[in-house]
Length: 167
Image 1 (cartoon, rainbow, N blue to C red):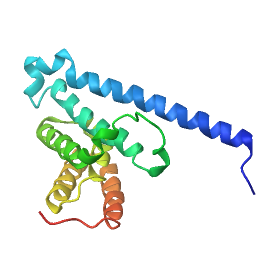
Image 2 (cartoon, rainbow, N blue to C red):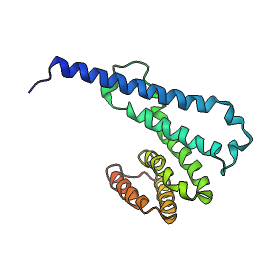
Image 3 (cartoon, one colour):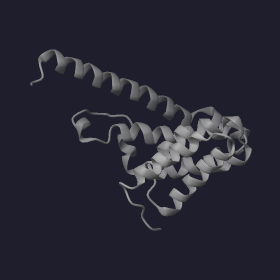
Image 4 (spheres, rainbow, N blue to C red):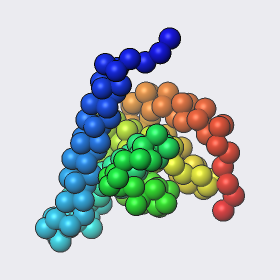
């Protein structure tokens, strides 16, 4: 069973669409890093949403860069975040640190941290960082979101494929 020209054309359109969407996401992410809000007085206050936005910055960098880490994309030039591939764990840990600092102040919005923690959890390798991820999921679960336990179970399963590294 072969692939006909119609399927190849469709695949090319899908790939182009993925790249365009990723470029848009990456552009928005980069605008955050250089935008005027980083100088806002609340930018360093863990209780503020301006501060929280920096966690989205780091986690989005992880997500966009990881999207293009497979060799299938090797022939496409100027992929968004391709220069961040060697910094994935650094971005993940930075995002985790911001999330942790917000934990004492969150309530119902705790469930919104799960997607961020998933991107973090898939990148961290050290035992210490993985323990921090578990603690963050436990804090969300303690806020009444039992689904956090399910996600943590999925992460634990994924971690069996990539053993942790000692500090």
